[in-house]
Amino acid sequence: MKKIMLTGALGAAALVFTGAAASAATLDDVKAKGFVQCGVSQGLPGFSNPDADGNWSGLDVDLCRAVAAAIFGDGEAVKFTPLSAKERFTALQSGEVDLLSRNTTWTMSRDTQLGLNFAGVNYYDGQGFMIRTSMDINSALELSGASICTNTGTTTELNVADYFRANNMDYELVAFEKADEVVAAYDAGRCDVYTTDASGLYAQRLKLTNPGEHKVLPEIISKEPLGPVVRQGDDQWFNIIKWVHIATINAEEHGVTMANVEEMKSSDNPEVKRMLGSEGNFGESIGLDADWAAKAIAAVGNYGEIFDRNVGPDTPLGISRGVNALWTKGGLMYGPPIR
Image: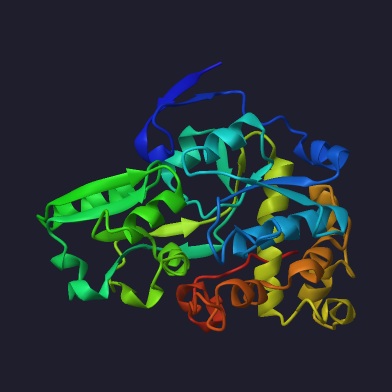
């Protein structure tokens, strides 16, 4: 039984991983309790956020619902555990949650040293900076000497250090464990700059007292591929999460939507027929019914529908597809074939 001491960017001040990863029975455990326990953020609009009645919504939440629908035929068969950046990996390692779907960056250290597997990328992001428009600054290269608010236990701390060192600039880091603490500190003027993933900046700006008085600078200083995470040691569960996500991407490419999924089961396109279970039984290899993907799409829609509903141009966040467009439209979203 090996133990590895981990620090800083991996997600905790002194995280210990004991090499007993997942048992190969997560699907059985999930079926026995009747729901998926999904780890999400403590409240990030557009990605995972509860309303006043405790109902969760967001791009990350919809992935959890898609998994629940693929297993149970019910996108509501899921419970959500809000986790800070510092808590998230420990909660997954310990079995407190079955799946982490919480705007988490895929890095080599996290993928190889924590006993975890990233099951894909559901949002390609990059770290940015937000400031008050009154500062009259138009580039991150003008931020030397600034105080910068961010979360502890994230990749943002290292990215800031790398960026400022590379550009021979000084800065003061003001770090907090919880995202809402960072937002409150920045809003109260305890720091000049707020840094996190650009998507998070657009989301958290909505919580500020006067959102219109703040702007996101143009520089993106890192690669932040965000995606779902599972424990190592259970390939079946890993495959379920991975292929449910892929199915939503392929569904968009082939024009399968929440509204027409039943009709599309009789499509003449062999790829669509295999995906929706009307030809072959690809669900059998991951322990699910033949129509696993059809159930997932019926519950939350294809990737484009998920994106547009939660973070797209017609939402308060107003984010364009950009690199998160399909590969056929100049983006990075590319789903391996179901065959």
